Length: 295
Image 1 (cartoon, helix red, strand yellow):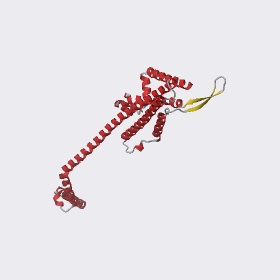
Image 2 (cartoon, helix red, strand yellow; image 1 turned 180 degrees about the horizontal axis):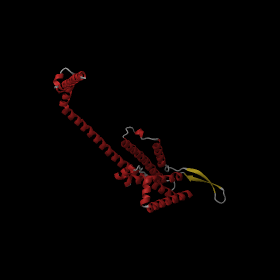
Image 3 (tube, helix red, strand yellow; image 1 turned 90 degrees about the vertical axis):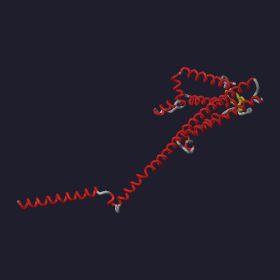
Image 4 (cartoon, one colour; image 1 turned 45 degrees about the vertical axis):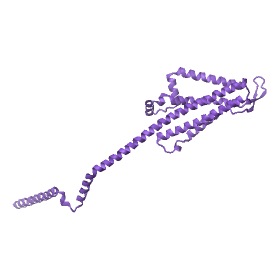
């Protein structure tokens, strides 16, 4: 028992002493200054970090200058895009107004020429030829305005979506509607006198009757289709379309501001006025069309 105690007494103090000496050596090594590691790679790393710390102010100044220039260019780019978009929007609205003016002018001249050619002069006269040339001139100007209008729409699409190529905006649907619009607005009475044979049956005797009919009747009535330009002008001048707050609320609610939405809004606000104007206009156009066809 004494030997066990002696052995245990000797072994334990020696192990504890060795551990304590080992810890002391480690503490001494840790507390020694960095200059003892002159030959190691640690000094190099420390010196690099110290050099980088000493050179940080210059790098910070250069980084701040580059960041400020980049932010300034970005702000200038955003401001330029917003200003360009506003200018394109105003140009598009102005082109729509001019297109409606020339479209209505062509309709008024067509109605005037049709009425005067039945009582005042004939189709062979120079007055009829001059009025038809005026209708053709207004139609060509109208087609040019429509092309410019759609060009501004494509530019607005490029600005809104950050596109660089205009062919991205030329979808098949857009091409189809542009072509259809140009065809509808291009219909007008051609200068000169042209006839075709109209064959029909009488109401009571059912006898076949033939008559020479002027081509101007077929080309004059479709000109009333140009009245669709009124809906476009109403859309572009509507406060729902021009007001920024209304557009932001509509964008959050995923509302598409088009002519149908504006008409629904007008029907909600003033249904009587909208129905009255639409009914009277439809009656006048239908009555004049029936009168022209009966002649």
